[in-house]
Length: 358
Image (cartoon, rainbow, N blue to C red; front, side, top):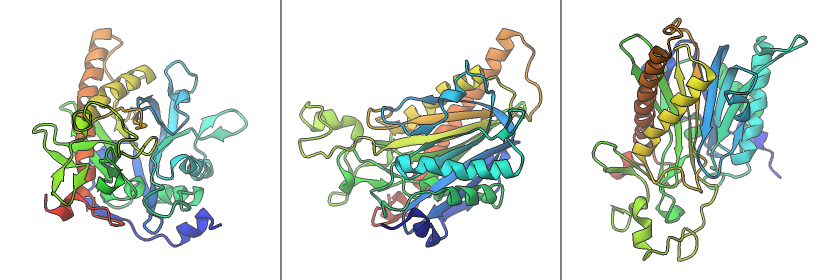
């Protein structure tokens, strides 16, 4: 049996579009790092909040793979998170979290228990085992390297980090899927508050342009050079509604869109959760169908508070702030989803939009 660590030794440099510093990197108190393996076709992305950040999450897909999402519920005791990871490797990728915990522990970062500082690290995974070598998964060493990479260089999109093995348009079977990846989005409010997102798009369905409805990437038939339109699969199956059988392979648990929205506003856990719920609107605008029983769609929200104190305790003012940030989060998520499929390149024989001349 080949050990996952041996696969990682043979890793190659990620193929990514590198932009200027900006987007989620402009959110004060946030660092983002990546590590990937182009031989195994998998990777991990780490979002570090080394000074701590209030966080919450929503899990709406029917087949999620997550760590510490219960801890982020508003009613639970711990208020701050120190790191969030997005990983390939399916459930095996959850093991990579230990590398982030070790990195933060070495820096003396974590929840102070009185006897030790325990880093609070949450995360989610995508299924990418069918793309490259299924024996190669993100490891604690890979996650540690992603932490070391955090804050260095420009903002990366495409075949980078957890986006290396991401694909979309699998409803009609893997023979029609297209390459996807990791994307970034960013909105700055007039108040100076920043809202950024990083998304890994591994959806069952298609990615569409929200304004025009044009399919950007998804189930694509190379013989006809046409998209199969995943949101119309019931009609194409004669109303059977079957996802497995009838010539369509069962893709249960092999899809998901996961991501992090970060803001430097000062929010409570409940307010972070409301922003996460609103951010789901960005997914609904850009992915069709979305939130299916076969996806594990999950969004984390962290608020560093680095922009200074928010409005007073006046309920109306605070609600207005949360609404404004939530609307920005929708835009940032939508932008990141589009970025994920337009920035990536073909890999392992899976075509990307930019290489098909679409």
